[in-house]
Image (cartoon, rainbow, N blue to C red; front, side, top):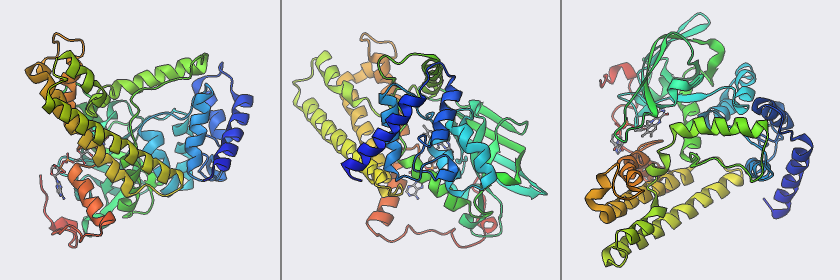
Length: 415
Ligand SMILES: Cc1cc2nc3c(=O)[nH]c(=O)nc-3n(C[C@H](O)[C@H](O)[C@H](O)COP(=O)(O)OP(=O)(O)OC[C@H]3O[C@@H](n4cnc5c(N)ncnc54)[C@H](O)[C@@H]3O)c2cc1C
């Protein structure tokens, strides 16, 4: 990627944008125009709503359109995880039924991967899909499924063959969440939010065309989603360029409000490192050598995490598939969250436990202390990221496993 290339793409995007932008359109009408132009995901092929450009063009297009006062793709699991996976592995019928409507924001998605006995060991999942003519019938339980209560569709991994080793018996599906066999129950979290659900599937139906990839090839497809997930960061806030007005913007603000409601505690989950120095001053401990040392260490880790994220972005911009940079970056964010939690605890002491304390930020800090553990779990735990880095980056021997080779039905259920 050279500066000239990005300048040219930016110029082309803006050229199109200035001729196409109409703030009086509805959000869906505007995004339909955006998808038709190929600037929603320019790295996709011209047959599938794209322009066949390198991966870096996606970011250039988005930044140019948002900076010029427009609106780009919806946030969340749909555009970030489901769409690229279906684009890469889905059949044409499924692609035409889902990709456009996901990019316009008409379809909201959730991810039904984890189960009570299968999180890190995702390949050990037990939700089962059985073929019945042209339909798959699904039974089982999923858990920790963010936004499952208001999703239209789900990406789902289920076991379709118990007679082969665990990775080989999985298939990847798109499931319609709006059907009688799907029940999403909210989980009350220790930080008082309810952003994820447990989902019970009882004779839920999936049409044959909603199989993504091959029957039994679900692990390969799931890995595509997981790689995107590791390098995906949830927006902390949604901003619109100064002076942007009109129906499109109004509707995008409402959409962003709904989205941010689910993820309201996610900034706290990252540790709110930026609040640490000010808190130290407020509590009169900014001169304390131990606190100063903690702050300096935290700052170094945060800066290193930022640079790692930039490296991952640069790799993606060069068109490299998401890889180990995602794991390293994710681990770096966990380190920052943990250290930030520690610094806040050191500074606030017992007051950090008060949801309504003496200082305006007390409730935020209390939420930080209760939310940072999630950072090292969501999207693959720290230990799993260590394993990926050990095996894929350092070339260490593979983690020993006792249940990889035999048919899954002989491995024994763990719940
Ligand atoms: C905020 C949040 C949002 C989430 N959203 C979703 C969602 O939308 N959809 C979805 O499907 N899931 C979601 N999850 C679930 C998440 O993917 C799982 O929690 C995660 O994969 C860990 O699985 P587990 O909870 O079963 O923990 P376990 O796998 O049971 O792990 C327990 C502990 O054992 C360690 N461990 C396990 N295996 C190994 C190993 N091989 N080597 C070393 N240590 C190991 C783990 O690191 C961890 O410390 C979400 C989780 C969180 C926290």
